[in-house]
Image (cartoon, rainbow over all chains, first blue to last red; front, top):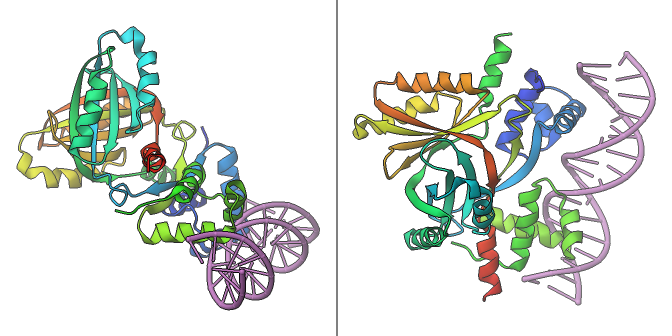
Length: 159
Length: 159
DNA sequence: GTTGAAATTCATCGTGG
DNA sequence: CCACGATGAATTTCAAC
């Protein structure tokens, strides 16, 4: 675990907004030299804090209007790894976590429409390891954050 | 909704892996000119396909070892918007969707440890609009994808 | 830990096939 | 629709405070 200072956080806040923002521009906005920006980012990269820069696509423009969470109940939880391998092959499943509680897995599914969702549902229901699925269709994100970076900011303020 | 061709998808695949990858390098890898890479990316930006480039942080390195999904059951669903405003103020909640099914909202929560999770749980339980919460602690992602881009690739192959 | 300037590399735009 | 070539801007490194 690594400690970040005020400058690090300000840089991260800018990169969360736009990962391709020019270092020179970040430097100007923060009132520091671009070399420093470069050094801090290199440091956070080396420390593994910055995992990667990724492009975020707009699902709606590409015709993916629907997404849903699906809770998966297995017949036999000892076989969970085999199920993961099968789930990985279904491109519509964009997130898969093993969880405590009623479900074995909680999935996030991105599809074009309700018919497409039904199609995914049937593919899952046909897997012999799966006993039951429960679908929670989302009406879209109310909000979504990259990371609880506000917590880190508060911790610095308090120190 | 916009149609993408083979080149567009190959470029997106590279940017999903590394949004800051140099256009010249992408061009080399794909065997096309960097001008073309530039044009295609500009096109996809203008079309809104490329939403933004964002930095992805590594929670573990920053001391956030635990994350969980929480299902929220409201006392009175007509008051849901007020609840969203309150949830937004809790930095640990990094995702909030209104969903069908047993829950009103499904949240994704990122915390340092189980004690921290309990703290968030209590904050939610104290909100008067909330009747009940159900916590599903995750043992980490089995896998996570940016977007079901494989579907688009298949559609191009088939055409 | 921080800065300013140097060299290298890149993004961007016009021209032309 | 695509490649080449020139220009201005950015990243990256180095020497110095």
